[in-house]
Every structure is written in C-alpha cells, then in structure tokens.
Amino acid sequence: MSFFPGKDPQAGDAYSCEAIAQVIVPRTVDLGDFAVRRALPSARTRMVGPFIFFDHFGPAEFRAGNGLDVRPHPHIGLATVTYLFDGEIMHRDSLGTAAPIKPGEVNWMTAGRGIVHSERTGAEKRATGSPIHGLQMWVALPAANEEMEAAFAHHDTPEFPMIEENGKSVRVVVGSLYGAASPVTLR
Image 1: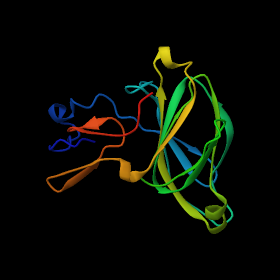
Image 2 (image 1 turned 30 degrees about the vertical axis):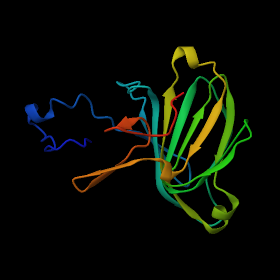
Image 3 (image 1 turned 180 degrees about the horizontal axis):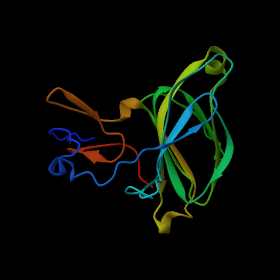
C-alpha cells in the first residue's frame, strides 16, 4: 500500500512488480471469539524496521457476556503500540495504569526491564457486547534501551495532527510526515 499516485502492479508484468520484494500472508490464530493475524515475523522476514511482531485482530463482535481476556503476562526488552479501529480495551499494568483505549487512540507500552499487563473488555462493554478491531505492533528497543525503566503512555485522538490535501486525509499517529509530528514519544 502506498500513498504515492500510481497504478497497482499487474500480475505477470515484471516491470510493474519489481518493487514488490515479498508478499507476506499472515498466519491466523483463532482465539475463540475472534482471530489474530500475525504478519511478522514470517519465514522470510523477521522484522520490518523496528517491528518484530505485527498483529491485526478482528473485526469481530463479542456477544453480551463475552469479551477480550488477555490475562496478566510479562514483557521485557520491547515496546508495544496498540491502535483500535473499533471497540474498546481496558489496559492494566504493574505500573498502576488502568486506561481504556478507544478507536483512533494509541497506547505505547515500553517494557524495558519488565512490565506485566492485561488487556480485557471492560465490565460495561462485556455486559452489552461490543465490537473489536485493531492493530498491535511490537517494537524492538535499541540494545542500549532494553533494560530501561518500564513506561506507559496513552494518547487521545485529538492529539494527532491531520494532514489534508487533494481530498485525502492522513492522521500522523507515530513519527512525522510533511512537517506534522505525532505526540507519541519513541522510547
């Protein structure tokens, strides 16, 4: 996918396809009420830039009484970035954080020397049922930062700059683009 104007590559046309180094078909893991598709790592590609895992979950609809139940588990030496398209997840961690994440928001959790966290559907959403759809990307920390203090940051949708041009809109969620910068601090 690209934001640069151009035609899609045509199968069998070597010239238009030479820019494609590899097509990654994510493997799917069924977690009961929804599926997670993991594109990274793959057999031929362990990382893309700093990303060591790239997960896409949903879209799915939890029925009343059901929800996401990723119980407390540890992380070390990396960071996770969670972004939702739909639904809500309650994040809790060993730093004392208790924060819901909603569509368009970002949770950046730096594990560093260690953090324990859970991701669950909150009681209100569980009672009524709710959708879930999002991304979670796992970022390899530079070797010098692998033992840093754990940290958690939540960013609301209005914090992210929008770039609008030629009838198109782009939200800068992480990093910078055309002079606009995300408030997410890369640790």
